Length: 117
Image 1 (tube, rainbow, N blue to C red):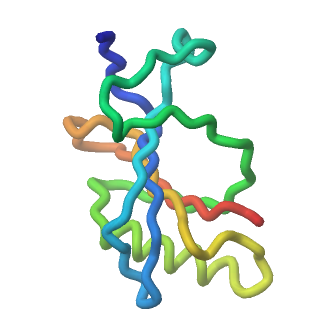
Image 2: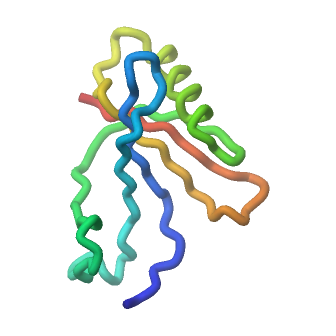
């Protein structure tokens, strides 16, 4: 019953298919504001779960603009290429992150994260 406003980043877990496109299965993460983290409210919708994200080390790339699926796929491919074959990271998923509200027209920040194994 309490409004949270915009959280940042909004993280979407992407599950790439063999051709690099994204499968329709997604998981969206929103950060719970600090004042609610010790005792988060119980969701009234069964599809919403509260999870604690474990500490992780990531490989990341950043880009601007209004990000679309194709942008995340392209930047994930660029990050994969930059890392080469030596870096150990989870290949079955990655995170697509947006930091800005939809009404912000300039200076937008988006990131792709690969989670180090």
